Amino acid sequence: MKLSLNIVTGEKVELTSWKSPSNPSVGTFSFSVVQRINIVEVFIWNETRPFWRSGPWSGGVFRGIPTMSTYFDGFKGGDDGVGNANIYYTVPTDTEFVVYILNSQGRFEQTWWDDEKKGMEVTWTSRKSDCDVYGMCGPFASCNSQRSPICSCLKGFEPRNKEEWSRQNWTSGCVRRTRLKCERVKDQNTSIDTKEDGFLKLQMIKVPDFEEGLPVSPDICKSQCLDNCSCIA
Image 1 (tube, rainbow, N blue to C red):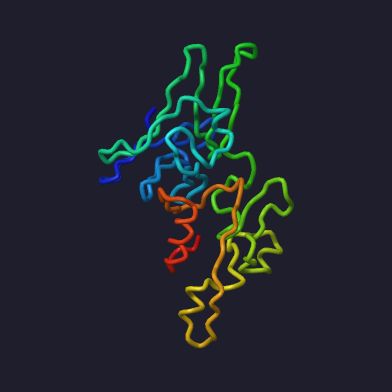
Image 2: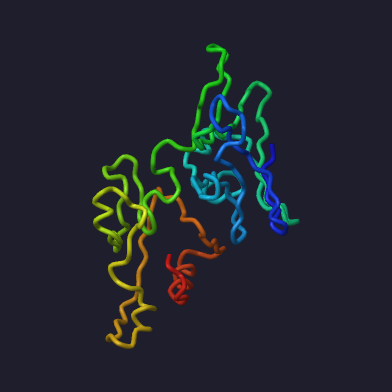
């Protein structure tokens, strides 16, 4: 099956869930291709709300799925150059029987035929923990399923609503402790702090939604961001 999005018309081919395991009418979840600023990825939607995202498609893997090179083989697609963004799957070998489904709980699952058990076995699922849910920790926070609590603010940030945060409601996310230099310079009521902003390298983190990819070196990317007051990277 080919999932597709026409950039001009907005027409799309998507996968939809059943309402329940025993009710095949259309459920609340859908799985579709999204393209923003020439970056293709796939989303699971709960009606109109984003529920899960794959991260950017690199042409071979989705960068937000760290185990993709291990569990996935046969995905292809991207921008076809004539206004369509496509993602499709081809069976790598004739000896494998693999089925991908979107279940009624909003999980995209890879199922594989186990000849010994004579049944389909789930070998991968899009939701392994609460950290896989879109926006679980809110803006400027990171999620780690092996930590308790699972959400924490990025370095230099603090909870926007500390009372909610203490109740483990993280949706409001985090805010900067210190404003960016662009904001400090614009404020004429305070003395200008000329200290340059810096960058912190984050590892094992899914690239945020609405990211912008630039074909430049990290140093040039940093300088371009520092010169652009709308850049909040």
